[in-house]
Image (cartoon, rainbow, N blue to C red):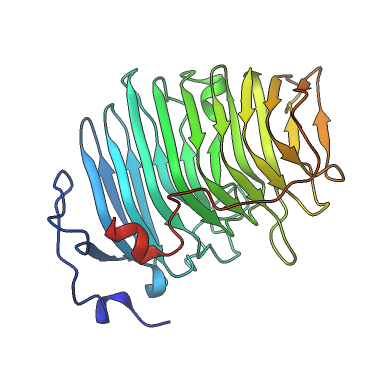
Length: 285
């Protein structure tokens, strides 16, 4: 795959808190093992990350009122580091935002970390105490969860809202959440032939988790909605959603999954409006 640095002739550099002057402007960053740090009130936007280098990149965001948006990753993450591409938390008790990110080129198998299953797309660290909005994300082919947001359930207790997102062919799960007030809405999960077959939605304690307006197409693999883990139960309320009946619903450790009357079993995964379908599309917005 050709390096983006060689072809992105229209790219310009924009600062961590700056805004690109026109839709076609973005900064190309070659992944070479660096860490990008975002803190209180900062905006990190209009970035195109070149993963064809074979290197890794980690983006960490803590504090409050920060924003990550319009970021595309071109090429598979072949670093094998077992890292999380994004490690995020609102640690100030307010709201931070991640929107319009393309991670659809996935990650190769391999894991140099001491634990885990490979690369994670988004990791929400246990100290998260505020609220995180995830919107218009495209995440495919990651081996250690697409959005791994269950850790605050035993930590800071912060909430997450996953809205208008698409996740496909990831393992261990696609959307993994825990805290009361967390929601997954207007989003899709797809597992198809040859893909990693992680859970569709995995709800951890304490809950309650709301699922609304989603399509969970598992093609008979794993579990569509899995409630409870490590001996601790939770509650999930599902509405206006279709899930794969063969993959089914699992309730562990006294968990309950409440299926409202408008829930069906004929899922058809969709790409929500506004979700980028390429790295360049994400970076140019």
